[in-house]
Image (tube, rainbow, N blue to C red):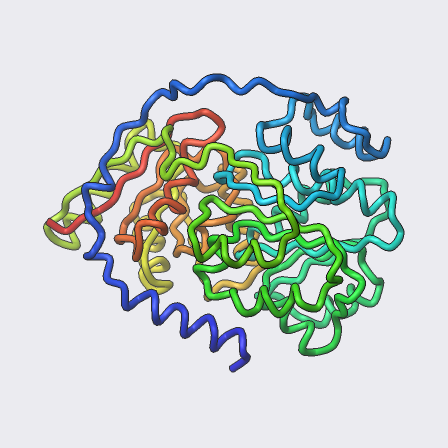
Length: 387
């Protein structure tokens, strides 16, 4: 068993010791509210930023005209090589907020190299996808270092000396230990969803990785929250950072939240069935607690005629990619998953998130329901509770 596997297993064991019964179920009941916050007044448009023409062209092709608030404030500071700590929820456009200044610097500086770390394979893949859209025709070379797929193709990829590396801390650490990755020339570091990486037990890996980069570097750190433990980590790796806070509310204001009480396993599956046949349940993400339960539930729902599939840790990365693409393309409209999908799953039209099992912590609950109610749409989150 590798260092990463042992570390992950110990962390998961510690999390399971925290009983979900400690969570107050009243926190799962909340009506969506219409925000009364003042409409954000943009300072910039994308044409105001001094960017390489190829990057500008790619931004235009993506139809980006008006930056989101996090982009509006991050991109100018990033272009000035300032360190940034961004507090922003998922779905605020933070990926482009750090990618645009990073790509622009990589284009203009031959000695610039960037490493981006994310908590999950899915999020790392989505960052790479958006990076490739923005870096098209720039001849920049990238490498994706994530688990669940063979390491040898990644080693061959690294021999091309990529200017940007995107990956998860565990696999990046594996490459460092194999001496297939040398970070002493890397002078740009991006940590995305720092809170989730710390929850997953990546603290020591992140510290060890960053220690191998150039001491004089530019740092971007993004998190949905900034508690004392997170702040103590990111302030030690940044230099006079600019703090940018955008919509850091604890739960999504666009999500109707409620509980579903059940009395037996049969009652539970029948009530789930009744929910899924409602016309409003157009695209549903269901969370269950174990890989075995996720697979069993997906089979049960398929036998009842639902277009469903599953994502969990026993599936290969290729299989997970295929299932996620089916969900995005509406070939299935019910996806059953473990918490592996709670972060980094970028599907904008999910109508319902259903917690078929209770989350271990309230933070896990927040991450789960953050998959719905996006892009100013109203979503629904339902949590099953044994009465």
